[in-house]
Image (cartoon, rainbow over all chains, first blue to last red; front, side):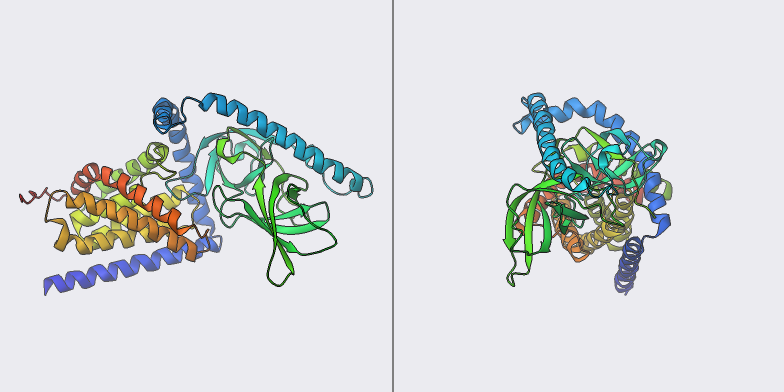
Length: 276
Length: 167
């Protein structure tokens, strides 16, 4: 009898907790302010601890990485990656800028990303547990950073600021599932790119125009259309695969990010917010 | 009886350990998941109801520190804690190594549950093989945490250690 009562009570408790969780998820999707504030407060509290302990445990981490096969080459790899990323970014920027310049001469109102102030910040934290999603940098709202701002490296777009605490910010990486951004290819072809998860290329869908073929290797940039969350012309990635859906109306592109997301060190936050 | 202060201390300490230490331990891209391990440990020591509440609170802490849909880790933790607690009577007391195996299995199952619930909520639909691989690694790593977490769960819930069956 007592066992039955206990079982019934624990089921009731579970149902209550599930209901609470679902309510919290719904509130979060609705952009409930107090949840964001609570997350910002926790970010301020945990991020310095992560940074401090991370520094102390770095040698242990290196040892761990070494045990799995690539610790010896870490420094060399990092240097080579940085060089490669800078070169790729430069090449992509030149390619995109050359096309943009031709059209900008006639359309002077298009904003140019190069004139936007940036804040350089250091990466201090990776994804939490196995949840993926965000990374953390050591600058926040006290440096002028606000939610939604674009985060870049010399290679291209890394993501956007998810939330900014006074001295820390959480960055949502461009490959994170559900990350959506308006993109532009070859200056006039517009589409929407969505993240597909870590290490996966972005997916871009756009209408299929046989007169304007999209080829592998073309550079994808932010669209910068009115009400866009990002300024125009930030290189995002390079097309690595082009396919057309069954009805022939939509082109599906797979886009490899230009920024080397696997080895981020310093990042730049663009102090740019869309016009209200 | 649960000690609220002990529970709060364990929650804060657990969150910091996850963020500062366990997140650095990556095997095949996966790290130990203290939410699932703690939910399972509380379920083993305290039964289904306290397992569900413990998993919920641990998950809530992780929800606060991450950018997943708020409540997703709490939902996964409470279901995992409840399931382990419900199985506690029939399985867990039998042999000394079974609690460790149960924490490991709960870690693997909880990771898969997290991926499925995440997909239902519009997160990425990961490759099932990748999820299975991650779940297996998390299960293994969580099993290693069990000898530490079970005494902590007993301390928080003020439950004396049972003598393992000698078989």
